[in-house]
Image (cartoon, rainbow, N blue to C red; front, side, top):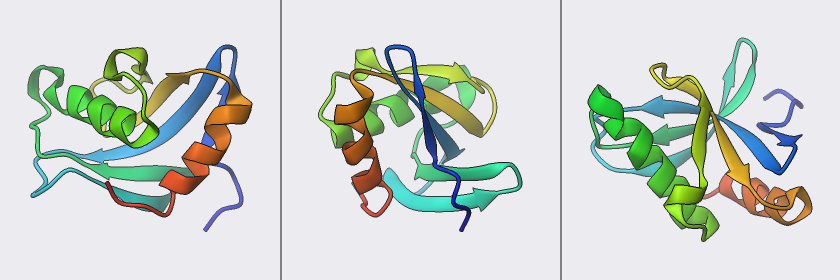
Length: 107
């Protein structure tokens, strides 16, 4: 596994890199996966990729895991791709430990 972090600090929050598997059998955070250009948090959602349904499911799942309102998270890049960047607003010092805990958990 790469030593590169799965998230980076941005003005006003953190940018989290994810790889989404739509139409999965259940919604789950599946841990880290190594991609050619760095690690990502693998997320499975039951929603199909049409009409941003999978994006909404990803945001809801992450928000639940981080105890944040789903409307506070947004897709910063990769709206139509499996590989996405999710913007999580807040203090990076507070969010960083929460994100590290997500690396090893399932929701």
